[in-house]
Structure formats: C-alpha cells, structure tokens
Length: 128
Image 1 (tube, one colour):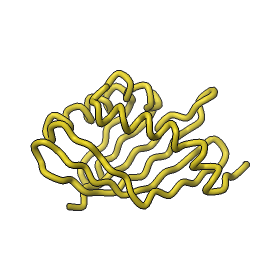
Image 2 (cartoon, one colour; image 1 turned 60 degrees about the vertical axis):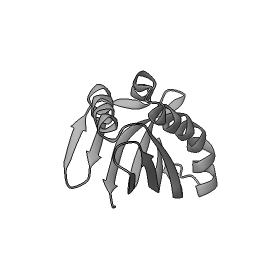
Image 3 (cartoon, helix red, strand yellow; image 1 turned 90 degrees about the vertical axis):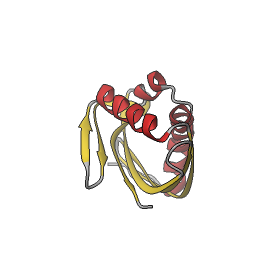
Image 4 (tube, helix red, strand yellow; image 1 turned 45 degrees about the horizontal axis):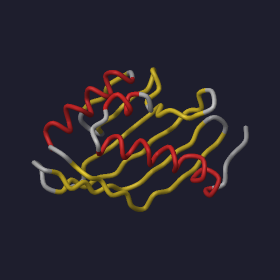
C-alpha cells in the first residue's frame, strides 16, 4: 500500500478541501452532499453520529440553522495519506451570526472513489 508524504497528501487533498469548505460556508448543501461518500459517517464527538451523505448534509444544514451564517478559519492543518485514503486533522474557528465564535477540532478521512476522494469519516468536536 502506497503512503503519501505530508506534502503529497496536502497537494492531493487541499484543493478539494477548500472547495468543500467554501460550499459549507456558502450553505450550498447540494454541493456539500457531493463531497460525502454515500456510506460516509459524521461524528459529533461525545454527542451523536449520522450515516450517509444525505443524512450528513441534513445534519450540517440543521447545525448551520442554529448558528446562522458562518465563516470558518482552519489552523494547524496536518495532512496524511496511505493507499486510497487521505486524512486532514485541524483546528477550526467559525465566526457565526447567532452563536458567536465556535472553536473546535476535526478529523476527516477521504476515500478514493474513481478519480476523486470523498469524505468517508468526518469527526468534529466543539472545544469552546
């Protein structure tokens, strides 16, 4: 199984991740859904999880309804990869309309499907 250097993993994943992140910020849920694997799982650490790209998108849309419009900034991003998987771990800070600033951490595992990668496991926690 081939493994990636951090630079290779970042070069492969960062462009896709940036388009995904902008779609989330812009609340373009049809676009967001296209980034999730049909068998993907979203885990809100220590709270709940949802299965499948449609349920994940519905969960994210509902979460966004509660926070209002938000713009997230990513920091301390670390990219890795092996075989068909690319991984990003990072901290986020989202300035939101209704909930103030929401800080947390996330881990995403993207699985190769055809000529692109889709989010297979998405785990986040709100830290402050």
